[in-house]
Length: 108
Image (tube, rainbow, N blue to C red; front, side, top):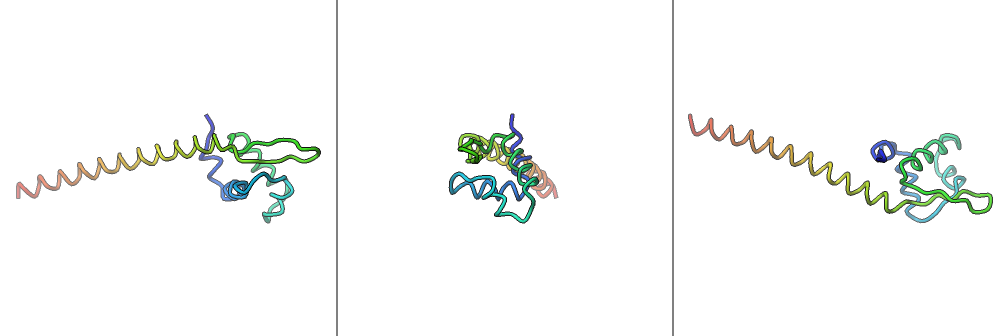
């Protein structure tokens, strides 16, 4: 299972994903948009490829990068589920806390 949090946890990788919303880009175009080296960008692209959030294709001598919309949709759905579960747990804890507080108030 891809580790979306690993891929999305870095601001440079989020920036690359944001750039790719507009369409496919070459590695050179991506490198030019950031104040870091080409090898550093390549490392970020490799992580995004490993987690399948982007796709790579060869076009002549260039590598074109695009968003993998299916995997991004899966990541989005998983994150919503995770956040929903966290909120549900917190709401249950709050409900239990409030109910215990109300019981003490009634006994006083």
